[in-house]
Image 1 (spheres, rainbow, N blue to C red):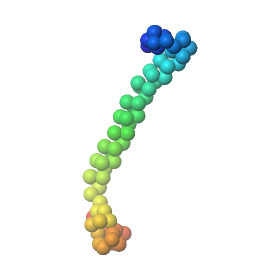
Image 2: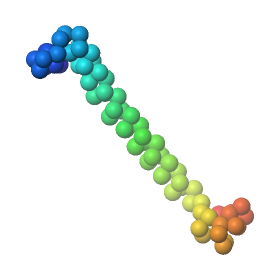
Image 3: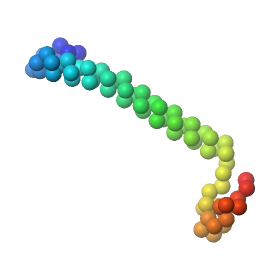
Image 4: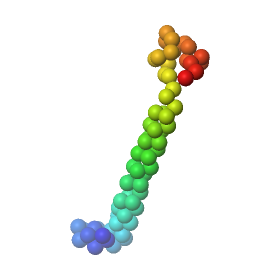
Length: 70
């Protein structure tokens, strides 16, 4: 990939730096996105398992939230 950046006009040092940074980003960004999606799915699954009642369901203005036991 360094050759490509040299071909578009960068000197060797900047081409190496840019190629290294691009390589790191090509690995890190999909990995971080996958971790975020797994965490989101995990929280959605555990929320569905818990079946908790929210404040919009238990009493006026959610005032009975502390006493909801389901």
